[in-house]
Amino acid sequence: MVPANVLSPPVRLHTLLLGFQTDWLSLVVLVTEIGAAAWYLVSVRRLAVRGRRWSRWRSASFVSGIAVVFVATGSGLAAYDDSVFEMHVIQHLLLMNFAPVLLALSAPITLALQASNRGTQRWLLRVLHHPVVAVVTNPFVVIFLYSGTMIAYFLSPFYQFSLEHPLLHDYTHLHFLVSGCLYWWLVVGLDPGRWRLTFPMKLGLLVVEIPVGTVLGLTLTQSRVSVAPLFHTVTDTHAGGSIAWVVSEGFTLIAITIVLIQWMRADQREAIQADRAEDRALARARAGASGGSVEPADTPRPAPAGAPDDGGVDVGGGGGRGRQGLAPTAPEATRVVVRDGRLVPADHATRATRDR
Image (tube, rainbow, N blue to C red; front, side, top):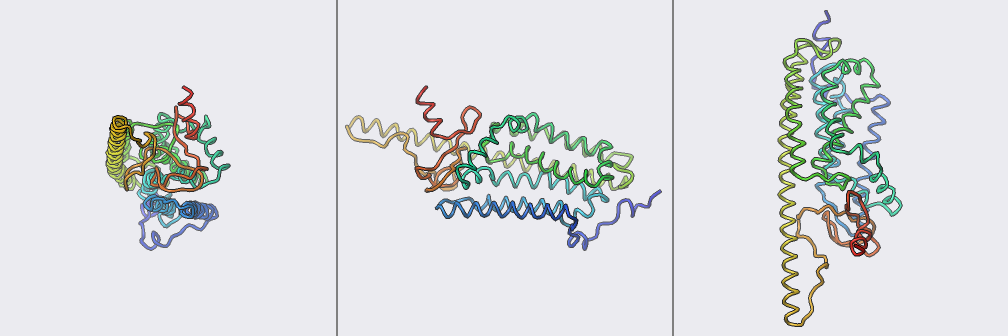
């Protein structure tokens, strides 16, 4: 019998605060995280030089998401991920829930499209249109990966097997993060994509996750054996299961609140657009009756401050403010919109509409 303080050693505050990971893989991950944050901030600066504004909340969200990934994989928390099940569960929640939501709310794909040159824009659009991307981001595939990851990993012998093989264990961290990003990009993401879910569908995805979290939490908290007998005690397993259950259910409620807020803002935007269309129609009617001139119906008007975006993505150079909190682009800029499930330049979509 292995003593409990060896299988599940006590967590020490000193190690949590100062136990940074210095192995070669952790350092590579740290450099990647710093590079990602630097790219985002440089891209925001590039837009500012062009006279275009990017939301500070989105910038803060991206940097915070990167920081959460570091806490999960490179801080003292990671020093306990293979010995204390509670810490491993917290790491799992950070990588699959907290970091992906922050990254999704930062709209990095939109930023990349707006801040990059034409060649990079074309390459990004080809990637987004690729059949493999369409399959991987399919809502049914995403929900299977996200839910299946939690159930299969913690309720099968694979969990202990991964602890016995450090490189495989490190891979699971990447899998957690990627599957979490795919899921939360669909639910709360602001970027354009192949699959555009309605708000009721997004709420449906969240509701589906509630019983999954309940099954996982109940199974772990009521288990009579350790989730990994060579590494954790039964008591540690119960404690980790309680954390997984409570935090995952609470986080789902937070996510539902975010989706409801986005829904209300979308309704507000549609109401504003309907009012503008009605005003333009009334103005045209009055101008026709008086023989005067009137503003063309398709003349863009700046959105009110704080109004939610409508899914259009400005890319290219120049200009003042438009969708996504940015200004209408200069003539050489390219606007990318979603048409028939594909991201296409807006001028192409307009020509196609006229041809029909």
